[in-house]
Length: 219
Image (tube, rainbow, N blue to C red; front, side, top):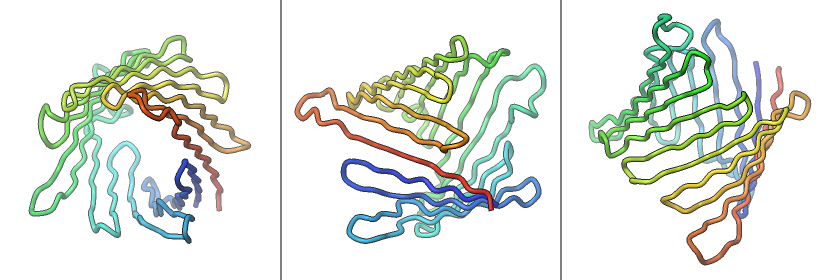
């Protein structure tokens, strides 16, 4: 059994996410509480139970909203025929009034694993289509342009890995937000991430600061 605790701090509040994971054969059972706030007293907003078979399916149940979500992998990477380098997954979410929303994702890899093309199609065809291309250069630098047909806008990100550290810059054209991020994945000190986001549209240039840290413990 494994327990993870993620703490998050922003300019206006501090929250925590607690996740407990247990293995039952090749299936994982998870329980998580998110948005545990400490401003004006502790408060728990979200509780989710999850059943996951890696590479096959994920079933989430949001307890406060009483909403289940089903995600399935139709062509997992490790089970694809040699001629296929794709992963196709789909998610189904009840929307109420008898309606069901869906999301379909396609991931296409090159033979060397250096390039990835992702396409995301949600419940309103073409209006919610996102195309994302990811290119890894030299195993350390990653370039990821993304186009959203629904917003008719671009997103660009560039990241560079140096040992345990990853430095990333992101720009969203529809919000004009520019973000710088530094993250580290250390076996001894856990995982942490620090980012600063500035809106380039004008007005206040006060950055939005976000800091996250994750600790994992095997019980």
